[in-house]
Structure formats: C-alpha cells, structure tokens
Length: 499
Image 1: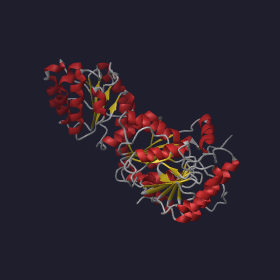
Image 2 (image 1 turned 45 degrees about the vertical axis):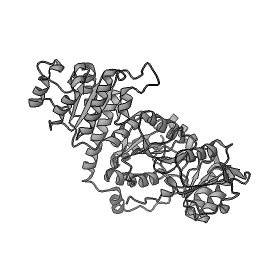
Image 3 (image 1 turned 60 degrees about the horizontal axis):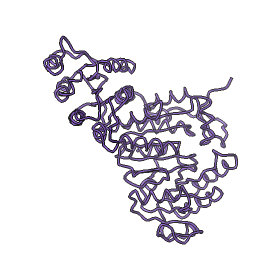
Image 4 (image 1 turned 135 degrees about the horizontal axis):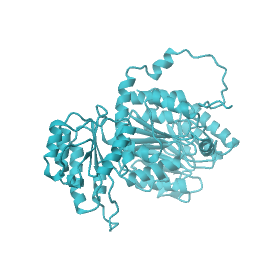
C-alpha cells in the first residue's frame, strides 16, 4: 500500500449521491446531474434544495439531514457562505466524501481564503474527505461522471488524470483525448485542495488495477515531500507518473496564483524532485497525451534499441535526428535481416539497408512481411512504423488493417506514425487511419511519436536504476528532522531566494 493512501471509492464510484443546491437552472449543478444520469449512474440520487419540491422527477429535500440514507458522496453547489455548514453537516452525518464545486475562496480574496480554511477544519473535525473547493468535478469510467463540463459519455481507458485546472481537465484533456480515441479510467479536478491534495489522488490511483499510467497537471504543491514520497512509491511499483508542471515563468506564476491560489515554487527544485522520484516531465498537453497513450498501450521495452521503418526517405532522416536528440540507439539492420529485406522485390532497394529503413511507398504493400522480418531480429527493443501516405483512400484500408495486426502480434512496442492526409472528402466518413486509432495509438506528429517511444524506454530504465537507491520513505526515516520554529499558518513551497 502506498504511503497514506486514502480510501476514495465513495468519491469515484458512489452508490448514492446527494446534490446540495440541485436546480435545473444552475449551470454546474444542473449539468452535473444531467451527466450523472445520462452517463450510466445506477445508484440513488437525492436532490437537496429548500426552494424546490421536485426536480428530475425526484423529491427534493430541504437539508442533507432530511435525506433518508447516509449517502456515499455529497456534491456541494451553494453560495460560498453556506459551504462550511453543508460540509460539516455531511461529515457529522457520516458521509465519507464531499465534492465542492463552489468557487470564490483562496483564489479570490482574503475572506475567501478564511472560509476555505474553515472548510479544511470542518473536514478534519468530521472525518470527511473533501474535493475542492473551486472544483469542476471528477470522473471514473467504471463509476460515476460528476462534472458539468463533459460533452460525451466517457469510455473505459487506463489513463488516470489529476489536474489542478478544472477547465483543462475536462474541456481540454478529456475532449481532446476523446477526439483521438484516447480514454481515461479516472479524471479529478483537484480545485484549491483545502483537504484532499494531488498527492492523495496519486496515491489512490496508483493502487487501482485499471490504471496503467497517471498523468498530472500541476501548478503548485502544498506538501512537496509527501508528493515525492507518493510518486516515488508509485513509480517503483511500476506505475508511470507523467506531469505537466507549469509556472516556470513569473507571468505563469502570477496567473496560477489568481487561478487556484497556489504558489508554483522554484522550477529547478521541481526538476530535481521529478528526477529523484521517477516522474517524467512533459512540456505541454499534446505531449502528456502522447506519452500517456503509449504507456496505456505498450509494456516497457527491454532496452533503448529502436528500429524505424518509413515509407518516406525524408521522414526516415527526420526520425533519425529525433532519435539522436532523445538518446535512442538505432542499431544497424544487418546480416540475415538485411538480406531478407533486400530480397523483397517490392522494396526496389539495392546495396544495403540503414536504420531508419527507407522502405519506400512500395513497402506499404508488404508491411506484414517487413514487420515479421524485423521482429525476428533480437537486435531491437522497440519499433516505429512511419507511414507517409494518405490515411483516407482504399490503399489506406489495407495499410490500416496490416498495422493493426502488426501491433497486436508484436512482443515489443510497435508505434505507428501516420503523417499523410487525414480529412476525407465526405466528412461523415470515418477514414481508415481513424478506424485504426480505435484500436492502437496513431501518432500524426513525428516528434510526438519519438517522445512516446523515449518515454517508454526512459521509464523502464528509471525503474531499474532506482532499485539500487533507497526509497523516499527510507530516506525520510534515516534523516533526523531538525527542530525548526516554522509558521503553522503558511503553505511552504520550493521557492528560489530573491536577490
């Protein structure tokens, strides 16, 4: 079990939910209830609103104490001056979790920060786990979808997302991923983290069997040592953690402070912390999705030896440079493997093969034979099949079918890069490359495909390397804590001294 792992099943997979502030006239509460009911929730829903008698065909209760059972989860969508009382009443009732979507707390002004501190105190005193405040919602593909900003029903995936930006969590990460047939197991918008923190979610998600990789969007962490301890334990146990960490510039830090009330901390300290705990830092959202989908689909390779087969010589040269930039090894294609490829008449190649291998456009006609030949050579740990051809025509149908079989048959990661035309003349048609994407990741950008390969290889190497080093827990136990007189009412973060 990971350090201090909370029990968050009532949050992600509640059997019963009470929504305080339930109203079809409320954007957040109304859409959240619509999505909860439309996207497969089969538990009990109890609307709570003293100004309503009935909503969504259900009796509306005046108060959380009037609900006929102690629910698993309370959703709080009321004016901020009432939030503390609702959270406290739910906790005293024995409700294990609360999701506070109301905004206007530490991200707003000092009074809001004071109310937020009262929420934290109520959570601690009544033993209720609180998400938020200022939270867009949470989702579990196998459980409940509790957000107002999710335009389609989630499909089951193996990527978990912990985001300190609510809008990015669903309207960007979720929607952009779904457009590319990338699916999540869980999503949580952490809000201001008055109680539950990013570290809590990472600890919980790393223990879920359906989670293959944890992606995080981080603005600031109030408990950096615990985050390091939790991330270290997760990655050592074989769950990759990939993070976009913002706030490296002064402008970004100022924006973050106004957004969630968080201080982002010193960027060099974050890089060091990530290195020490096996967390991979991604520069932006497309990179996070690219790397996350690779860990979702493929097992870790045994080494860093990559073979690239490309239908375009120019694309092959570009990928060679990108492999070198990422310290990936490209062993020669030699011996029996080279001769077998040279004997394929469709390739029209004479003399020798290099790696990356330029199989020309003709090579698309014999992709299974090429793959079988390369897979039989134990000189490689991972493969990239780069297709610089149209992804929408009749020929693409055959190429897509071949690639689907190739990836399925490979014992090692076989990554698909498809750079040709994507938009069909008839927008109602699903082109072949998009049908393939329903089964395996299909990268459209050369850099993203090589980042994905490098991420797989780097994580395997990181896990092996860190076996020789003590865990964060062991280090903490072995290091005596200095007696310091620290302020108890401040959030401590990594920050570079000024001047």
